[in-house]
Length: 481
Ligand SMILES: *[C@@H]1O[C@H](CO)[C@@H](O)[C@H](O)[C@H]1NC(C)=O
Ligand SMILES: *[C@@H]1O[C@H](CO)[C@@H](O)[C@H](O)[C@H]1NC(C)=O
Ligand SMILES: *[C@@H]1O[C@H](CO)[C@@H](O)[C@H](O)[C@H]1NC(C)=O
Ligand SMILES: *[C@@H]1O[C@H](CO)[C@@H](O)[C@H](O)[C@H]1NC(C)=O
Ligand SMILES: *[C@@H]1O[C@H](CO)[C@@H](O)[C@H](O)[C@H]1NC(C)=O
Image (cartoon, rainbow, N blue to C red; front, side, top):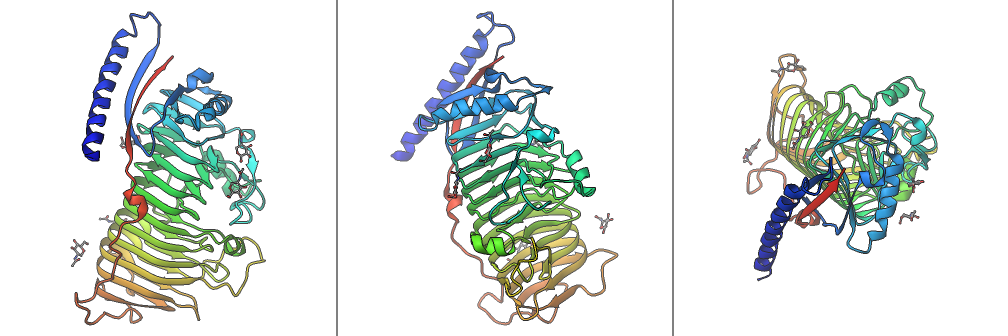
């Protein structure tokens, strides 16, 4: 009954929407307003909004040279009054919208038209400096504060950044140069950072040339990231794709990432700061990811993992020309844990290492880290994978006196490159089992005997809560110019 009601409401909404849209488009010239455009669009989101405005209503100019920082800030300040009145949507029309950083509000959608490009300004003063993250204790590039991200939000509920594949261009080259020359005073900005927020959606947009990381949800819960195209030169420094950091219940799906660093890097704080903050990343689903990352990993866990990483499930992953498939990075001083990791259905083409675990990553925020803070790495499962043109199957290095345990690898076929290394597995300080893995694994990962299905790693059968969240179909009519 409920289903039928929903279905008929939906159908009548769609019909009404199409008729109204047709009417507005046909009558716009009769009204004699030159250059006026009507855009009708449909999109999927966690929530639809009852108030809509265009950036142009707030003085926005999409000529690629005029700054729109003030227009974005005043638009969103104005729209924040609708937080408790059905929420609001800010439409960014076709054009090139040069802007500095701006902050989002709650019950709010930022929508980019397919021909809209947000161009990040290269004026450093338009990137205010904010405090370091409490779980990191300092900026990653430099001690002290960090430049705020282009699109920033904190302490929000129900925030959506989406579009019809519109673009955010970070114009990152000057930042990469300053980083390489050691001339950064503060840590580089990210393109999108959402902190301390619930019910977050980032979808259907293209992100190019970020100064550093692209998408950084941190201290968030109930996060949906889907349909992103992320592009950066493969030699650009630290242009990670998506970095879920101390977040609970996150889904990343249908993303295409080419970058100069890890495509997805799962994090949870750095050494003593991360241990004290104690906020893990858990219940993370990664699905249908395509990654090209010649210098880094397709999915990295760490190296900042001091708040812990638990229950990560990844499936249907395509990796092309990447350094490693799944990589666990940690070290003494990190503390925390990486446990209950399940990755299946990965296809890898041209890789240096299919699997890589590093227990001596180093890189500490300062010299106050606890040398007795040993990380726990346990219950790591990989299955149903094929790889071709691989230089070395696996390099698995745990920590002396603190072995990485409960590793299970099954049904994995790795074809070697013509230039492959003679020794295909190097294993130290690890423990686990394998079944049906080619080439033959190291002695620390013996072939599992028995078991009613003849070996094979056990994967959870339930769904994560975020996978049960259904997006709504929203209809919008925006008039602009
Ligand atoms: C955006 O939020 C940050 C952090 O709360 C704050 O420091 C900054 O002043 C805000 N920017 C604006 C333009 O309000
Ligand atoms: C945001 O939330 C965090 C965690 O609950 C809190 O510590 C902080 O004070 C809040 N910030 C603002 C600006 O409300
Ligand atoms: C979005 O735009 C990017 C960059 O132009 C393109 O590669 C990608 O195929 C587009 N995605 C969709 C779904 O149209
Ligand atoms: C082994 O993995 C392949 C994908 O690489 C999959 O098609 C096949 O079904 C798997 N076999 C078993 C027994 O699970
Ligand atoms: C195999 O990998 C090497 C680099 O290790 C690359 O140069 C070569 O083009 C790859 N071959 C194929 C068939 O992809």
